[in-house]
Image 1 (cartoon, rainbow, N blue to C red):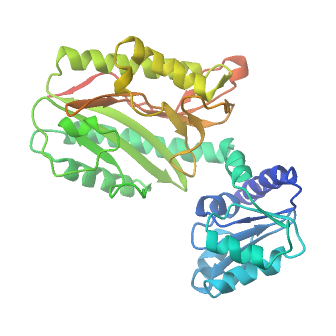
Image 2: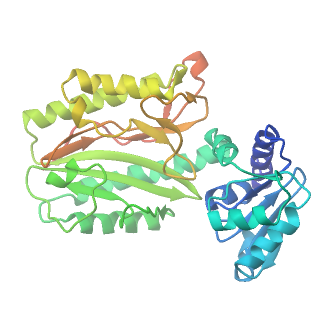
Image 3: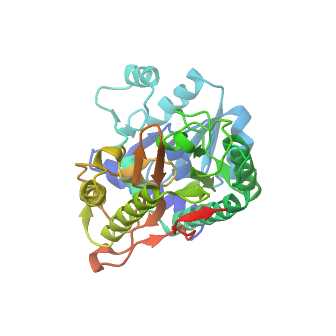
Length: 367
């Protein structure tokens, strides 16, 4: 499949979904959705109808947009209100659905459009992106392969005297040299998680200058982007020989994760997968120490639908990509997490999910 056909298919998927809202035009402001529809990642707005995609960009982005999105008509504009004016010119006299989340922009659009002609609803966009196509799956697989290589590098680099920040620098460099890009999070100043000793008891620990020492637990959570698409995995390393309690907790997390992975091979709602994974940890007496959801969808965003969490009623379907990542966190002492990115295969025929990550989940003692 050519990229031109892929983006046209993406456009048709969302247009089909918005037709249920009696809309015939979509306007996307969100970078991930614009990329999904056009192949361009940057400051832009895309307007799509059944027959065309118009990508409205600041003049400084026009040449780059032409190269990245050759199947789109590129409309160059000045920034700010001028771009909104271009959008208004395209959608007047149409029934439009948009993913816009900027209240100022929404008010400006509504003020200049007839009543009822604009619906703000991101649901069709996120719903379309849940089911991955062949090329999307290939990109996620490539990102995951790079992550596996980075974990091989961890084995060589983790040693007494190494620090969280220096290991992060090595891994980021290796990822970039492998053709990947790093993710930027609003809630963190670091692109990845390297958490050692008591820092590993924080699921979203910030990277520090803490130096590794003998008998440390080191949790490394790697999230990278390849051609727009994301791989996400976590491994827990042991510098020296772990105590019997640590070994036991690691085994509990490993068994819980396997239960969640196996659940992907049969029709399930997401909440049941979380419940099944969590029950393993509950029965072992550590239920209060599993303090986050079991997993989430992965694609153009690190965290997207479906949500593998308690009481979620989304049905997990073939060609969804999700993480399964249980963890146990002993307050102010240590934490253990294991995470893989997985492709749901044909779960109606109980086909096992495909694990994009092949790096071992055996307990790793680095001496």
